[in-house]
Image (cartoon, rainbow, N blue to C red; front, side, top):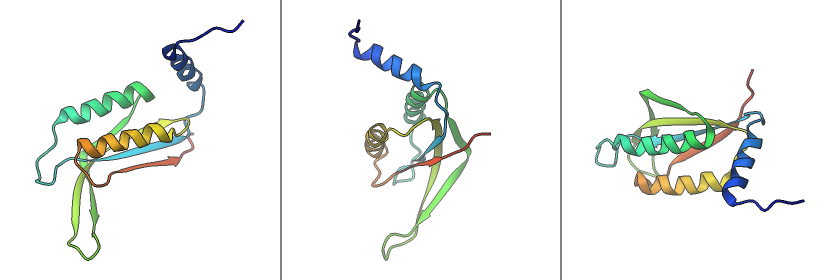
Length: 125
């Protein structure tokens, strides 16, 4: 006999079944530490993202002790740079819809024209 499931219960069952899958993907989010005026973004912005990723993936690594620096030169422009905070999570598979929606939110939150979220296949030993 088939059981009709609520969306919440279906989600919990899907998440439970994923826990047995190998964590073979690494996703890195490069988040700016300062706005265009050089002001540091409030910690609560990062705390919210941290909590969301922890709830979804069960853990994350944060590189914040020595900020990462990014440099680029727009077309015929002056060199620009950012100080970045890096969050990374491991997962069994990439969910493009989740990452696309998150990126759109982060672009608005941090008032950025672009933001890097990259994924790579990894092999754990």
